[in-house]
Image (cartoon, rainbow, N blue to C red; front, top):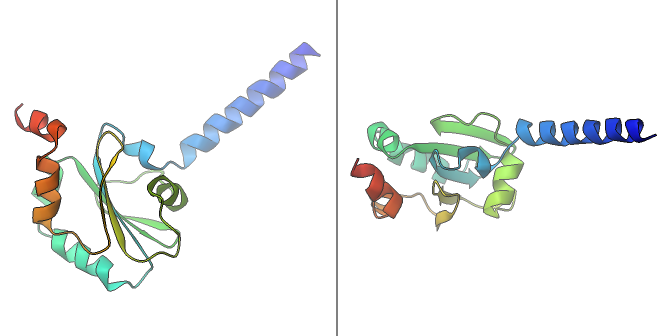
Length: 143
């Protein structure tokens, strides 16, 4: 009886651990990356504008350990960096975004905190200025 209880408990624990590892939200980036996430509906012109604004900024994005993602419908599209195993649903939940909401850009710091929430595309000057004013970034830049 105790042996079968232990077997069931271990099976449930393994299933829980496996399901959490397969689709993650913002936790997937913690202490490694700053993440700009653009949430919108497919076809929103703000998405193309945000992509255009950041198109020539690959060095600046890399220097700041950035990942840029678009969450459109149920899809997560990496624009810069990688997004292995992240779920659109989890990202929306973590950021407090409604599935059918309008354009929203969220900047998440390495500590997992939301540093910026914008309802229009974010210019590189605004984005990098905010990041560069953060104490963690100042510490990184001094190394």
